[in-house]
Image: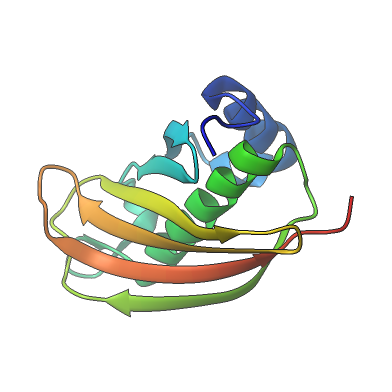
Length: 142
């Protein structure tokens, strides 16, 4: 695969239109790049995502990973709102530093009915993984 079906701007517009709840309370998720079988998304570490100890919570990292996977899939198959998560697995590796997180998503398989990907989450400015996730999405028949 050499190019995406949707551009970065088209993918952003689709996500904003179909999932406005992801930005409720102010924009926090920023889709920064889409590419062949990939996407990068940043989560601003707003106070609403913090847990005691001033670190980004596990549920916030889970949402970031799932949303990044969805963005990568959409960019590569087009605007299919009913592609749905069928499984997500998370390994929380270390407490992230206070601040924004970046999710680098790579699709491992993109078939007609299933997509499988992995997401590496790091704190901005650090190469150390704070979370590794894998996920599978069901793609509806066209």
